[in-house]
Length: 271
Ligand SMILES: Nc1ncnc2c1ncn2[C@@H]1O[C@H](COP(=O)(O)OP(=O)(O)OP(=O)(O)O)[C@@H](O)[C@H]1O
Image (cartoon, rainbow, N blue to C red):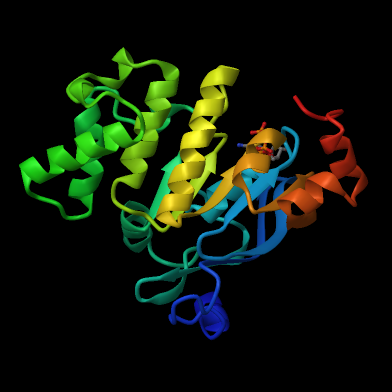
């Protein structure tokens, strides 16, 4: 039985009936080295799952496997899509690309990886709408301007290129480009990494508001426990590619059970 069939019953289509994402046994090696091993969890609609761990613990590898950017060696990632549950590991590439364009968002740590630097701010946001079928130029431009405002960028700058923006503005633009089409699931890789502390705080506030207002589900990778404290409902703690602890964010951070999590929380391992 394939993964989708195996989990189909559990992740039924009825609203609120099952998880949005069921991750089972995801494993990926690089030669003899473990990237991530046997990772399983459910992500429920509207929930933010934080994945934390020190550098090299397997966070990026796991996120790449979940978001279809890397093929795992083993495991299933069942997404409860518009036509019912599908295993995104075994689905064909065009179908996966379609999902990534319409249902998912991916926010990169470096905005340059998620923006088209040669295209105007409005173009960056509008492009994603066009990819989901919008055709009316006036409406696309109005929606783009509305989203610039929503991420606190002056809509008068709609024709500016991203490189004319500060790092924090570029990150907010990347978020607007990703969320304009109303995705159900966002993958975020260190979305506040590389920014000044004050810029980070503003971005976190903005992200928290958007996630709440849109009822967005998200998988959020970070090594920064302050970020998950603010954004994540639940946490997976990774060490050497494996999940060593998981639970509600406050529970894990306030009462860590695993020795490694205790070290993380006491800042010893934080970079
Ligand atoms: N392309 C690669 N080739 C070989 N080994 C790799 C490759 N990418 C990652 N690894 C190894 O896989 C393990 C997990 O790395 P990964 O980048 O997923 O961790 P991470 O927690 O995301 O780290 P960071 O926070 O530094 O990005 C590490 O041991 C790493 O050395």
